Length: 103
Image 1: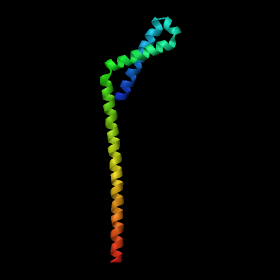
Image 2: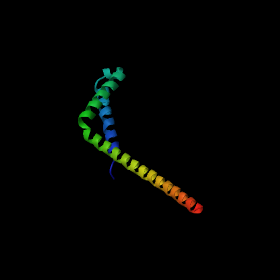
Image 3: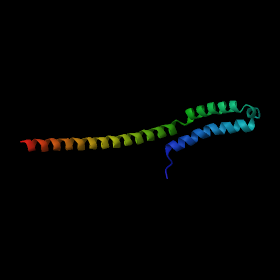
Image 4: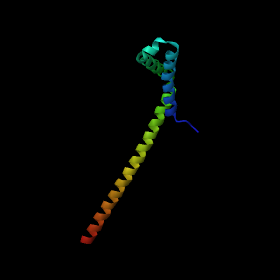
């Protein structure tokens, strides 16, 4: 079973935030008092880690999202085109039927 790239990237980003947060919380007692500052530092460290090391998972996740969106748009375009073609065929049939009745 293949794990979706978006799930992998999301889990790695979450770990990039939670691991520094846990390290600061456990090993630096002053950070427990300033929990908001600890969260900010952990977020900055997490962003830095993800920017430096998670480019490949981000690339895979974004390309999969792009492919899924293109497939969905192609399906929608084909559906709309089929409906338009049916409507045009019905209009042509109606106009041919009406012109032969008057002729």
